[in-house]
Length: 246
Image (tube, rainbow, N blue to C red; front, top):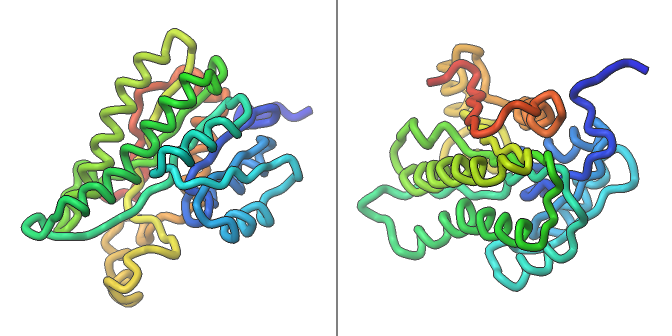
């Protein structure tokens, strides 16, 4: 048998935000690499579409809105023992600093920061994370690359990176790794919808040294490495994947 250090055979992996975009791309590739994949999101129809794209028939949908306490509990209770968790669920919301409202903060921080943190707390309390598991947060280079109207999104991702660093230290005695992946712009169906034109996006792509935005698959390949036993000595890292963008 050909040795493959990146195989996920025998592993059970949870992917949140698997309804579309990066989360869907990660779920599909995890299945292809042999994992049993549990996918989470709020849209049942979209999750069914993701399942249809996945190889194998062992996969499972756990529907639930992670911003709602009662649904978070149901999700955590429904999950099996996990060898990997990939937190992809999130939103972007552009609003200038002078126009930020309290409800804007609650919305962005609630989904991008509070939801994964509190779910992770529930998974630990319920002992759903196996020894030597891998936990991955999909963050963003926006944390250190400011742009107009992006303060809340940048702050939420920065908070998640700081949280992950502390979580990694606390879980290290159980050999559980915690890492972040921080992409630059990735092409998804939600990319700046209604804000900029396709022509503007194509022009901006040319500013990247590799002359394109990322695709969900680009992020998925790096995620597979972090979920696999090939990364057993990696924790507390924030891996940037940017096509050369700074």
